[in-house]
Length: 166
Length: 420
Image (cartoon, rainbow over all chains, first blue to last red; front, side, top):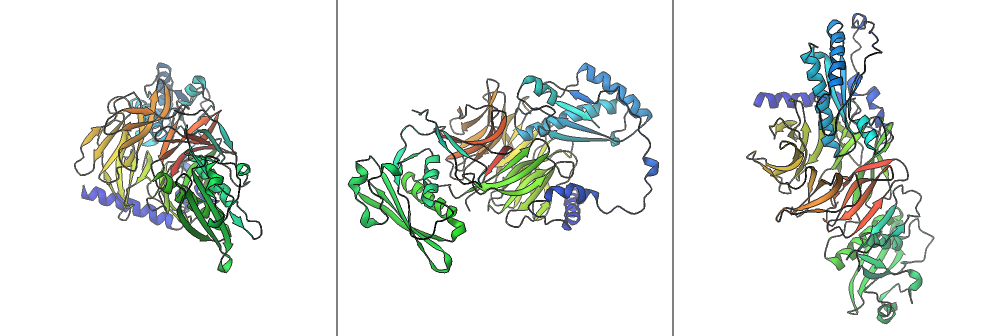
């Protein structure tokens, strides 16, 4: 208990230290931090990345967006079939993937963040069950912040409750 | 009891991007006469008495008398004749006079009169410089409101909210409680969420996706200095300051699923509060700092629960309806304000914590993010008007309603400041 708390505080200290160089931002250009900020600095140490940049197999015939019912994170039958095909490719040709979970705009924003994560995790769990290396899968929820379709109709909502495989 | 009046009030100031539209006031608002304040100098940038009038009108509790109906325009006590006002049915009279003070400052002396009892209520003065005219006006409004209603005014407070331009650009905005004097606190190409004022009104905590993942930041409002507080796998969201400002409650899913944590800011130590496989999120502190209310779907649907920090004991607070989320407690701790689904539509509702009954306050749809004024009289929330995200306000007794639509992007997630 104590040691985990210590680790957490050390992790926070690292985050703060990394950020120390850019902790003060102007009121207008802070959005640019994603390009120049904490996650992309300080790794120019001559590491050869060429061996990891294998040409990716394009998979145009495979669907990469999976839809969900309202307030649900259960995979539909067609989603399971599509994910089984993805898992086949990912087993033979492992690559890092990112699962982005989304919800429709109904309900509260932070609860929808949790629902988006739950959906993305049900996709992840299915892929892992199919033999995909869990360490290659990153799960990020965007909640209701990035609707695929604008509008307040059920048709729009059903397009927004989704997980995108990237 | 409620009047269906529709008063349209649009600021003349070109700077304000939020406009005010009062959609419902009290049936019997108190008649008040606000005489244009005297001033002998060059024209000022703001019409102070007009701002006071707009403040009091927006509260829904007052009906200001049109200047054209006034029989006299007194600027000092010697010019006040009670009969001029009693025949117009006015209950209160506010007069004021501005004079130049040393070092370019302006002094405003203002007096409130009780017309039916024919006696002065108070005489006060406020001094400021030419850039503080709106602040001076809101101070006058606060004084008048408190003298008449016995409730502290909240006209001098501020609001923070998120403005989105499609999904391309997001801004964290600061404005006066009336929507004027907007200022950009942060611009990002990635979403910004869940802004929360620190209890001293000097900082804001929020969620930013600028690292391509959600992370919690704190930012000093005056200096724009900021600090990333979390960078965990999964959710980093729903920050809420403790009443003493030393801790932040939040949701993290680093241990597998969304749980409530408390971060002690000075030491960086995180303490896990909830342990459940369900979603636990949206924490908010009780005013004694000893408990958190939060949203959980541990019963199958999202409901509001309360956890005592010392014992970890969890108690369910809401039972009516199948969706109650993002609760906030009124300043007196007696009322829970939350998002409540009623017949499939999301509204803002209150629950009396003593009697337990739920009351739906809003008739709009897709209502969310309620934030209560520090005096507990009104709350701001986000809703849709047309297809646009707007802010709206409703009094906790549902008697007064107004909208603050934005002329630009979609606005949402209002956070009402504490007193400064």
